[in-house]
Image 1 (cartoon, helix red, strand yellow):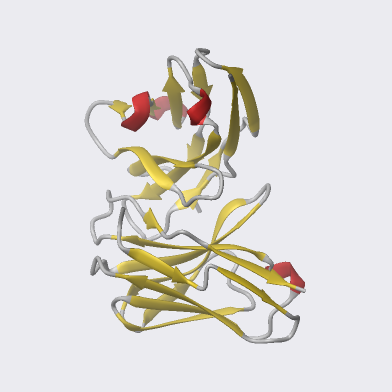
Image 2: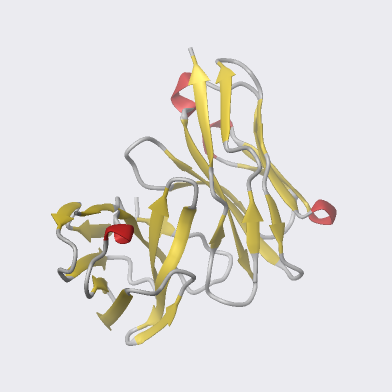
Length: 113
Length: 113
């Protein structure tokens, strides 16, 4: 398995609080991604990064921000969490070549009450 | 934008039955295609991938998939399923340009012993 660590693995918090999820990789891959997984929707891309300080929005980016100050770390922040952001969040990484697959972390289960 | 359709949302089979899960995509250019499996409570794992060459691709655990360009399809098959194949299966597409992967909504497979 690829060296991807997501933290925390589980979190319960209240509406309106800020939340930061961390994805750490040891593979030195250029691309990193944040997805959310919800029943009936599969995986939806929130944001991705194609290098240090280089990020772009995915299809469900509203309410989320990201930062990548080092190759190995990609942070996802919910500035003011809402109940609609209750989900399982997956980080993924991939190499530069376009035909290479993504490798996924173990996920973070986030519940917002 | 690219999109991926998995028409079978939930499939129930008995052990030893044959499996075929449909995947259709919309993208006019060169594509890279992937099937992932997600066992209960786990992260997504790569089953197989196609990016060029023989359109019949063999993956792990006895799975295979066939790329039919004229039908924009990449269906997953297995001749004889086992109880341990119970999982959710995701088809994904990545164009030759751009950095995003596009996932289908997934097919939940239940294999009855």
